[in-house]
Image 1 (cartoon, helix red, strand yellow):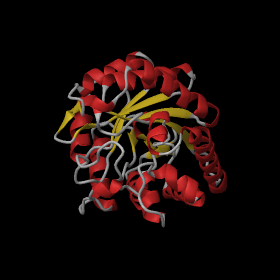
Image 2 (tube, one colour; image 1 turned 90 degrees about the vertical axis):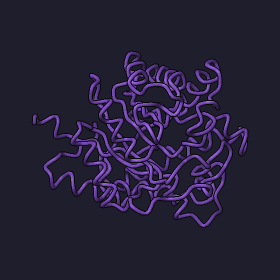
Image 3 (cartoon, rainbow, N blue to C red; image 1 turned 120 degrees about the vertical axis):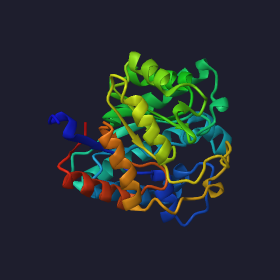
Length: 303
């Protein structure tokens, strides 16, 4: 195995669920953004804990702060303050940690996770992703288009991010029963090739059950692009509807840090060079991944 293939980018875990566990406030349709307003110190603390666990890249805590979601669940006027707060929290955590981690800007689904039928038309997608990119560009090292369930949604986010001249990684969410397909039913391989052709440097699969991510790794390993995965720890995401809260979801009991690490290390054995965690994956999981990877002589890198 060559030296480069021993380099693994270790991402952080799921900020939204981690903040819900730490927060004293009830669940909100704005998820982690509401915590940022009510208890901003928790965001800094969570970022810092993920860095201490070994994460080399932390994701901006703006997942639910899209124009459409804010207009539906809060106020459009919250858009700029929430992004400023998210950028400040990530920078503060990095500075306090004393480590040279990278900050990834987040381009999430504009309306709802997992629901390809909720994606707006192409004009709205392009307009809103450009707004998100403009708000984040000066404070991030790269962009991560997250939880993309539909090819045209991913295309719009990728185009907006590439225009900012930052590295762009795209993370697709796949069918929990068939990791070769997006939740839209489209082929993962087709989606990966589409975004790679317009500038995405890495293709990742996220917020799907670990078993589906493993299937997806086999699919991505046949393509000529660096790839990886970070799974969620839910039994199913089916109960979560647009505008709903995470109270509707249940956690699996078999994905403690050791259990999750077994899945993630299989992705590495299949060729993944980016791993981390999504919803329900906390600092203890990332610490276990860091330990297992370094014990196996992998080198944790930020890019």
